[in-house]
Length: 519
Image (cartoon, rainbow, N blue to C red; front, side, top):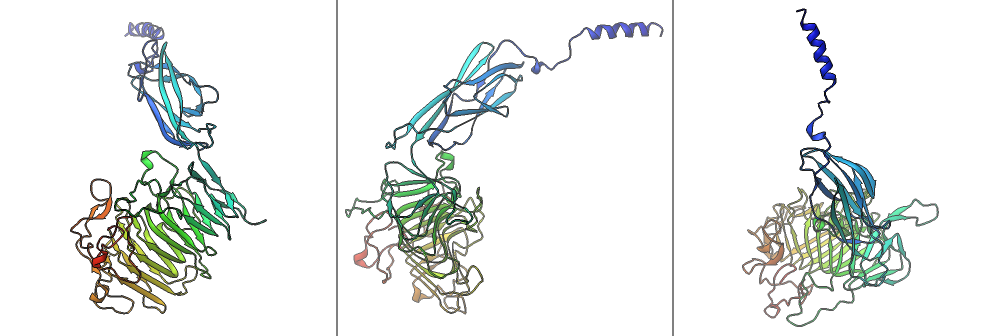
């Protein structure tokens, strides 16, 4: 035992001379480089002055030991790109340590400036590079963005008649607006004042930033100037350049069909004579919102040959104090007439009519399959109850020559039906419903299977070409064997000579045509 203590002292002295037991992956080596997760970071179509989404660039250290690297943008001081490295924002970072067998995340974003070509709508290219210098090794990753000049509308107040140009897209961004001195500010992108008319001509492209709204106290006229040809080949396909398109301003492929990216178009009680034709409204909280809760005057809207799709308010990324839900058309005491229109993938409602109003739908397709939503509401929902206090108000629904189908077993709901001044005419329509499938009517519940109404109730399937539940891009035209084909249309109202795509309703001479928006 007397020899163990001196031995312990000797070993302790030797241990003090040894290097620390640092993990191998933390030991910085003086050789080796990094592996880039991509050779290019691409931003596809970015509107000038609006910050892009943030893209991720992963950088990998495949070496067993750590390396130190210097990261920087190679562009000039005016580069539109910016970096975020290890939580620090800036154009560069020196001596960044990447542990062995580990990775580094570099976040990239950009704000592009106008390229000076104010009247040119074409895209322009803006490039830069992220440079890495590691142990004398130089590596670069390209940064590429396609910029797009645009007309920007931030609290754009329109007090006199105006027609928008179509040489560049229009981008709507909500900004505070004080309507009257002393009033609380409201947030709006475009405001059409009472007595003024905004005309949006054929081919216009309107993109809205998150929460962006068009509020109409005056009049909105969309695509009045487009007159399709009358020949048999003069179709208006979904890609037709004359269609006016409303959508969110995120143009990356990921956002192509994401609902709720922007607000929508609001029509207040003072508005009249509004028309939307040959248009597409998509990826919004609501397509059109007719809002007059006091029901003193009905906002009026006519919609023709228009597609409203990918609508929902369930995942709002902004505060919306006006609309309490999402819908293709939401009407609080408004009047709506729609012909040759398609409503699809609306997460809450295709149409919600509350507080009375007059609703005329002729040759419309409501194909409301909602695979991305758990929907527990009927696509078409109407109530005569005033939204402020529940007072019953006059309501008229004319649903004619249409298709109402979707993923819910009751795609029509008539709240308080049977009350005075509540008129419902559902005629010559293919409809999915359990609530109204009887052949005889009872109090508050019309029997829509009555042969006098000429409806098709709960048939196996309308046989669309493709739906959002099948493989491929949805196509809500009808297969040849569809039960909605070759039906006798009702008059009045008159049957439109052409369908949503400007295809001739070919059997008019035989008093036969297809139900819905597509012949």
